[in-house]
Image (cartoon, rainbow, N blue to C red; front, top):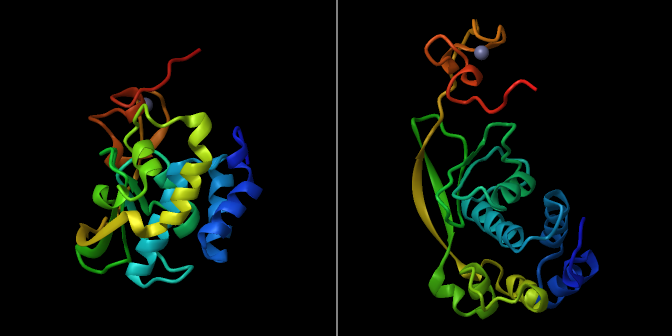
Length: 212
Ligand SMILES: [Zn+2]
């Protein structure tokens, strides 16, 4: 794990989590998550408590198959991936770039809709934690160099106390049958449902590189 600040070192994180009374199991997960993320970003630390809370609300245990949506591409996807094994690669993670620090999680469902739980940062509750509050608001009052230790202490002390939750329903993604189609533009193949007209995405609207 990379540590640019004294407070980011695993020993310092451990001390802060012990003082705050974070359960040992969650401490281990938080350290794994920080390592996966390459550093203990405040957002992943908050995300760990968020995923842990949502899993408890769903009554799930480790290893259960779960689906998740996060409402920002920042930090939260990693919390879902490491703590709940809801990953981009297993196609159970959806990232919607709304810009809110919130997640929705659900179990598999046979029907077209699934019961889900949404957990979000509650601004009212956040006021009890002034350092997290100004960091979260991206306020110039937050002094990155001198307030990071206090920020981590407050995040661990707060745990799930800065969240609220609600019951929601989400559509279930249907598995698509597909066949392979060769793009006449590049000669490479893609699933038929991803063809744009008669071209693949890379020869169309998803072009992201040019030949060197
Ligand atoms: Zn093509």
